[in-house]
Length: 317
Ligand SMILES: [Zn+2]
Image (cartoon, rainbow, N blue to C red; front, side, top):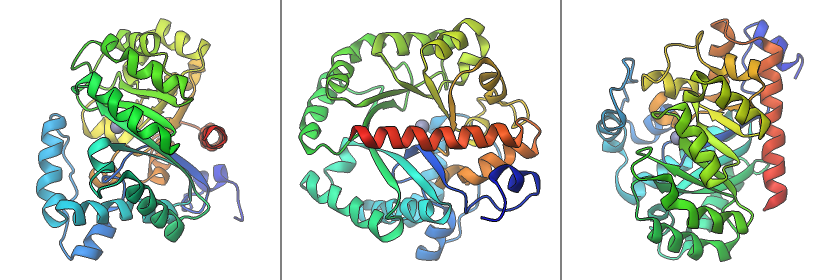
């Protein structure tokens, strides 16, 4: 690399070659639309208007993406696309979340672990891969605990997340699940403050003893919550384009990363569902700079923080 990341931002140079992390990726939705179009021959029309809800988003995903890559074969193509994308834009730390149903679709869990390792070795052998177990907020908490306990002996997953319909049931229902994950050294995360409030973010962190929050943007409405996150070193794994397209945030210029950074809340920049939102990590950095939201040096600090965080997670595996 001839110039620094900050200089590349300032001079409008491509950012793909600079090492980055992506710590918030839903498996099967983490690749590029180009990869799917190349492999299936079907044209995908990128979504320009905001989604009204998660259901609206899911409907678009079914019609526009899944219609050309259905079933297990289609899922594996999308998963392969996520690793191919990581290689293309030098994602050196890749946290990818899987539901239990995804992990058992090839029969034995070992088969699925082997397959992801094949993709990693093929596309991005130098990338630190941190698989995550994703549990739906709406799930049966006892069943989720059974699933976690089944997975732990493989020493494969690095973290636990709660996703989908935020606050579908009281946070306290997940305490046994999170205590077990903590006792086994997993990084504890949950989607909170994407659709909920600042108080919901704080409650999820306190009750589940979270290390990180997926999104957490509602915390920007409360200085107390931001100080709480800063003082307890709770990182927010932000996904700007996802929040904007889902109508959770206005635009890049007013995106609350500015506020979090100024309050000293640790943040990372991620993609969430690149196959849907059609925005790479490189583009996320680009938009935050071009909009005037963040300075190049600040974005570089965040980039390096994400890489260090991933390295620490890797040491825990
Ligand atoms: Zn997410």
